[in-house]
Amino acid sequence: MPLHGTTPSIAVGIDIGGSGVKGAAVDLATGALTGERLREGTPEPSTPEAVAGVVAQVLGGLVVGVDSPIGVTFPGVVRAGVIGTAANLDAAWIGVDAAALFAGRLGRPVVVLNDADAAGIAEMTFGAGRGRSGVVMMITLGTGIGSALFLDGRLVANTEFGHIIVSGKDGERLAAASVRTAKNLSWNAWAERLNAYLARLECLLLPDLIIIGGGISKDHAEFLPLLRAQAELVPAQLFNDAGIVGAAIATADRRTIVNQG
Image 1: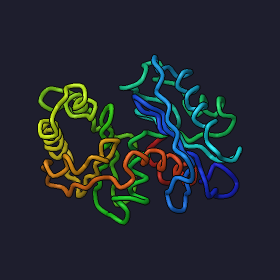
Image 2 (image 1 turned 60 degrees about the horizontal axis):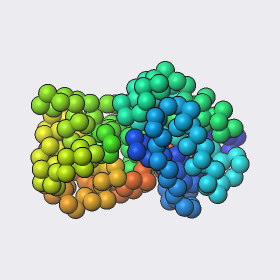
Image 3 (image 1 turned 180 degrees about the vertical axis):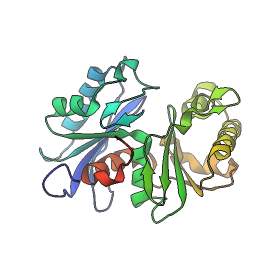
């Protein structure tokens, strides 16, 4: 149900990542950003209070109404607004009621959800997964690897397929986009790592469609032709704005978020 008495036409999405915090106002009818997208670096250390301060800074720079609903993504498990894991942010987040923290800092109700789930919701609503049934998996490649799983358009929240073990390693430590940068890997070398990850993923789950997202998705022409999978592989259409858009959508319709507690 909407956070407010009437369904809004514009909502704010703020996407917290391991390296940056991005935000924008979103038209809920089209999924388009209605103004400038702002980005600030993720603070170090990335403690709850420090990150909440950056979220407030991003919101303060947006031109939005004082009652605009706000959705915030988090790179970890989120159940009923409470953080369960924080692989790429400070461990102090674990057990924090992030929805209450952000609401107190921003002065209005806030929906908090997993970042990959938000990106998946956006792609299923306005992007590469729109109208697709069956099993759809969204993979986000960034500082880590996020995953969002959909069955006939319904989200199964908080999947953590980025952490499956591949060749004795945590999947995201093998094949995240950050690994390519840190190790200065060629597209071919990184694609082989990603292929190993996809092969293991498909041993555990047989999706009909895999959507490749995250910031690196804008470079899909460089690596997508190098990937191998049984499933259909497509690039995300909303690229790195998907988390922002999905967070905004979540404020308008909580029915898109299932199994969250």
